[in-house]
Amino acid sequence: MSHGGRATQSDKRRLRREFLAVRNRLTADDVRETAVALARRALELPEVTHARTVAAYVSVGTEPGTIALLDALRARGVRVLLPVLLPDDDLDWGEYGGEGSLARVRHGGRMELWEPSGPRLGPDAVTGADVVLLPGLAVDGRGLRLGRGGGSYDRVLARLERAGARPALVVLLYDAEVVARVPEEAHDRPVDAVVTPSGVRRFRRGGRA
Ligand SMILES: Nc1nc2c(c(=O)[nH]1)N(C=O)[C@@H](CNc1ccc(C(=O)N[C@@H](CCC(=O)O)C(=O)O)cc1)CN2
Ligand SMILES: Nc1ncnc2c1ncn2[C@@H]1O[C@H](COP(=O)(O)OP(=O)(O)OP(=O)(O)O)[C@@H](O)[C@H]1O
Image 1 (tube, rainbow, N blue to C red):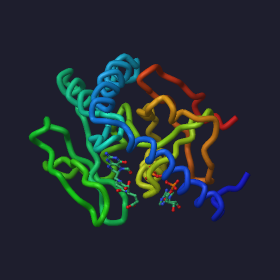
Image 2 (cartoon, helix red, strand yellow; image 1 turned 30 degrees about the vertical axis):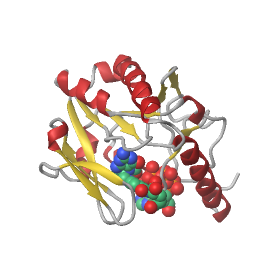
Image 3 (tube, rainbow, N blue to C red; image 1 turned 90 degrees about the vertical axis):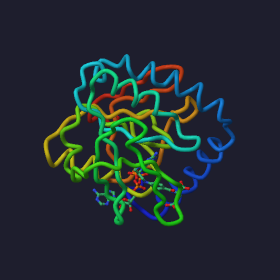
């Protein structure tokens, strides 16, 4: 298996395009309905039930919807952290204070994101989370995640590892995005669980078998 070769990177790029093309065929109704199912399932995860701080993100477009989940967490008194994309693709963090606390931001020619408008807590704030929800386009049978390719969450995972933090790592996806294999590079780290509208799949911590 290749670890970080050019072939792997172009495989990842091709796969990202394919998964995004499928997502982009979803209607607003599809997105809304699945968001409700995803929130219900995610809120039942024991890690989430017991969490005091959850690092999440605000879904946009046809991404699996997170806003219902963010609001339910906040209503429970959970502290919700949201990412702020930095110019080098690393992430800073701010606190979610309801929809009014978000600002619409466009970074270069990329898709518009909703980011927290309150104080920046610094990139290390994520090490205080009990659960980290990571965006992704697919997760495979080993728990390896295909992200958007900025490497933002690869850096988050590296930062958690350096800090000795072991939050539960959870990805929200559509059912068809849980696949047998995604291309693997040496820096990729497995997640603990994937939540889809139809269920939860868990992966063995640290396992790449
Ligand atoms: N809702 C949401 N927020 C998020 C992420 C995410 O994937 N989803 N991120 C996840 O890391 C971070 C932002 N990273 C991003 C990385 C790429 C693109 C983007 O627009 N990509 C183009 C494709 C290529 C490019 O321009 O780089 C696209 O998807 O059209 C946007 C955000 C933090 N916040
Ligand atoms: N710890 C790290 N620090 C800095 N850059 C990194 C780190 N890990 C990976 N990268 C770089 O990030 C880029 C994107 O990596 P990759 O294609 O695996 O992204 P991804 O996991 O799909 O996306 P994301 O992490 O944004 O969801 C690569 O060029 C990679 O070398």
